[in-house]
Length: 236
Image (cartoon, rainbow, N blue to C red; front, side):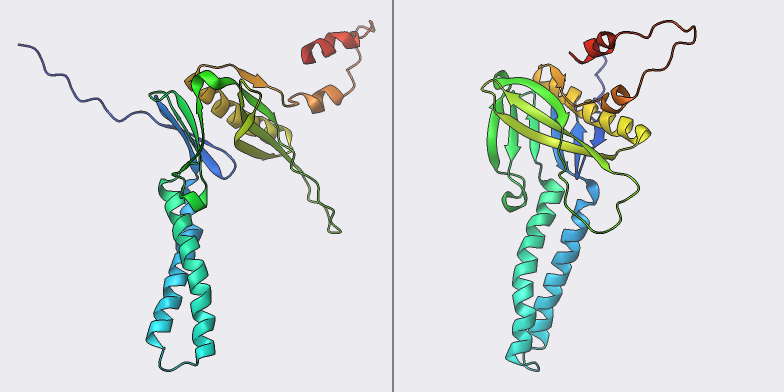
């Protein structure tokens, strides 16, 4: 008599934190969606909007039209936007990669509740997944500069047509141990996406920029230093 097979357990899930998003990696699907705590502020905004509506209903006979309008107008603005943000943070996703459908879907943001599709890219139209430097810009300021600056990387889908579609970013403090940790997160997410779409992962970010700028150490035996071409060959 054949032994009935046991039901398979839940599909293993791996989460890679990114900048304002999290990469949820499953065997047959990858979701880039808002982080878990993203629902807090929309929930607070929705509560404030509903409280304003309740105050207008309760004190409609006691307050002047100006006071009622001062409460009603912010409520009309806050409540819908907060509700959309709450739905997006709970069930929406910015990018969905599905092995079953063989496609990468770039979905709408808050206004589309993270459900509507902006662009659909079949796997066969993907040329590569790229990890590149993400420019943060530099705004002039008269205030003291922080003790550290920031470094960022962009995970980009490059189509066979040459079009570049940004998937997500990782931002890290520009310090040795934090740079390694941040770049590792960006590379983990890129490699998972590359494995899903079965395309190569290309690193164009200046990974060794700071180390290459340091002068080479003097040889201990007094011999000649290595020629510059030996280090430059790594960057070609």
